[in-house]
Image (cartoon, rainbow, N blue to C red; front, side):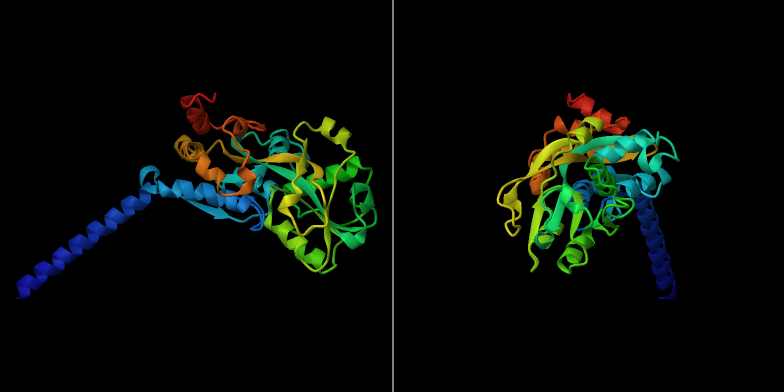
Length: 326
């Protein structure tokens, strides 16, 4: 009996060791990657989530486990990727251009030459949401008003500064500029702590639906008279926001403004096979991906290779060449 118990114990220990070794091997085969997004009420967060979900479905095949992190936005994501704290990030196309060329927040650091593009995603409209009682119908009406231009590290902050400058308004003198996150702006507007806020986002956006649905009446202002801005910066283009997305707003017709594009970026240090897997899953399942958010409706495979300023990562390029996109 004692001998049998010893054999049983030895067998159990051996099996346990095999299980531990097997688990260790399985874990060793898994590569964990994180996608930096933006505020949870914007489109970046569900975009990162959709990409992660697609890749995680094939975790047995690729050995990749993707997670999503809510962050401060484009500038944060670029800097975190360059520092190795994130593997991927959703970044505005203008911020990708500025990082690659050592402009704006990267003027002192210089060009971020290790930044790599994967593909572009949805268009993002520069949106000006204003309380109707503040009398703001266009950019010029912002003088002297309390305006949230976005937190440092967000893409929208520079968009707001650019458009204010084009309208002849200094953000640090002619308006009472606030630096809150976009996810906080709707509540601040409804609480009468600000008169308006900028948000560069794909539509429809939860934060703007929230802002337009409160007791304080809200109008989405037109952003016009900025042709000089569009000529100066090639990554900007004219667009409009369908009024049907925000039935509680005081608007009666589509809103005129301008836009950039959301892009997925990474670092040159991220292995080709990981970038290839992510690219393949999104492009092979594009119709499924497009159903996840109305902002993706107009996506096309060809269009997703535009607005890319950084060199395309070799892992993504491998896929594009396989399917004849490059």
